[in-house]
Image 1 (cartoon, rainbow, N blue to C red):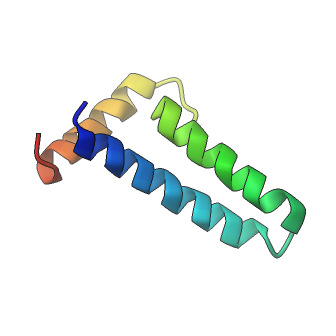
Image 2: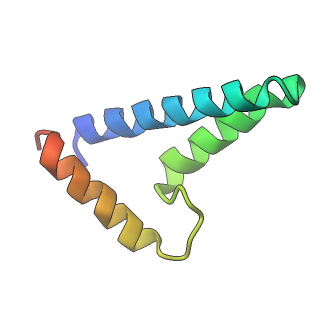
Length: 72
């Protein structure tokens, strides 16, 4: 996996974390940051963001998308 793909994965994880924090902070402010970090880490480390059993298929689709836009 190239450096660009790892950086893009990290960027997506940051965006997921920020959205989660923004949505949950008004409801449960004490839990928002922890929940955001958990979701970001789950995406980044598993690359299976929807929790389905088709992790390989989803990862292949993500890799195909990266191939279109990121250099090797």
